[in-house]
Image (cartoon, rainbow, N blue to C red):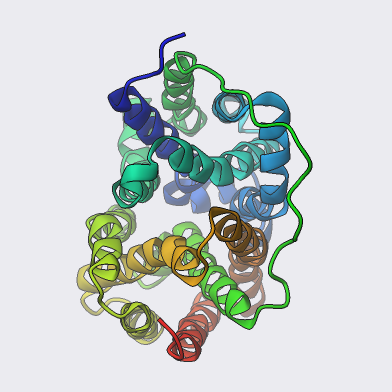
Length: 383
């Protein structure tokens, strides 16, 4: 079989990455409405975000073993099909069991696909690693933003039938799977698993993991509850959804710009510190005065978190030299980071139910941004 062209490989990378976030973010504009219609507490409805992110952490270490048995390309194809199937089930999302179960299945698909996308990049784009990582990060961000930006217009177009809107996101996943069918499946080299586990005893690995966990926790908590916080502050539903869209979209250019700056020699701890400080300032403003310049605040917060996510993806590459060690550091970062991050949407929902407002849970989010800043200060010793 002929080797696929570089253009086809890049297109496959982009379309797969685009489908790694909409299954989570498309719920955010509708979450308060769904909770009310299904008579779910905010802690319960937050499971639609908690479960996918939890599986992204717990199952990430299993992905390489599955690829070893089935093949990298076919495993990724299976992940896209599973995501498409799970989102199709949301046609029956008026059942809370179906809605939450579909979230779990989406999480399994994303959990297995995420680490393998890095292997796909390493296999086919070794000579253009930085550009490929840029496309990977940008495509995930675009997919996540699309889930937010298009959900309300789609709901309007589908005569207010929100289960149909949620199920719509199965379409791009299944179309992506059709493209991946064109990629040949390469056998993985046989042999024992390389010696050495994850870097559990390395302090800097834990610092990077802590930064990723805090950053991801903030992103998924805000993706789930930012609309509700602005709504509580008196902003209209339309404007609140627009602010979440702005939060998602404003940072898209940073997916390319920030890794490029780091590669060109700008201090990574300086970039990380700037992102953390900006996130802290924005979240403090959302706690104390959410109606003050909300568009500017949402845009700057999106820039801060998009930049910090792009930086977190490349940090292991600058800490160790061999591809195997990079994989180990990345696996630890994703596994522990996502496992901890999945708790944040649930915690925000629980604190909202207990306190009666979103001010307390968003204060906790601001404290997390302060913790991010402390971690970056610890990372300054090298980098």
